[in-house]
Length: 286
Image (cartoon, rainbow, N blue to C red; front, side, top):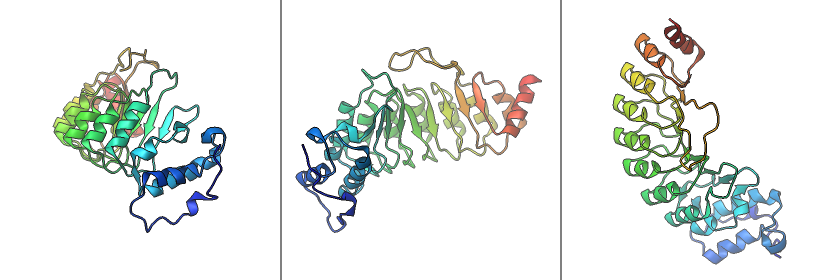
């Protein structure tokens, strides 16, 4: 049984130190533990642990931290693995998570949150995409995704959220459109006609709520998305819900008659601002 050897891990001033030995990191992290075997932890210490771990590693999710006992990173009963304090992730840490987190054997949806990452290597993207997830893989801190990273992320089984990505090359859009997972969120503030054509092939829902305008050609492409969910998810489980795909464009500020007419033909669930929804409905009903 571990004793708390540090009364308040958040009180450490570690700023002068640039490098930490693995054993030192483990010692400091263990100081936040209580209970039999050191792993039966009162929830009030979780935030202290996460804060200490992030500070010690200078915001880098290291292999040493990723390998720490699961209770610190998962919310009991929620199926969520949360690493939101880290701005970057080591390839070895991503590799370890790929071996640690697996949807198999869980009834709950499993989610992985890495929402403050500002960079992601191709190798780390490859490992993260290998994790069997039925829930969300959230990477909302990324502001750009190159073609190679997009290619790796296309193989994830998860709902993929890249809400911070404001621009996307046509080739990166093509890769993401080929993904196995069901559902994609992007923070695009503009979209080329070619990228819209690629994204129209996304399986499942597509969230483009950051778009304020949409060309007639892009609207026509998106309207041809398959509005029906596949019967099974990428892990082979039956899909629930009403079977309809959602295309969300709630940030649009205007819509031409031609675009409204195109979107009225979308077979799934369309989400628009109320005044634009009325315009689309008038074409659908007229």
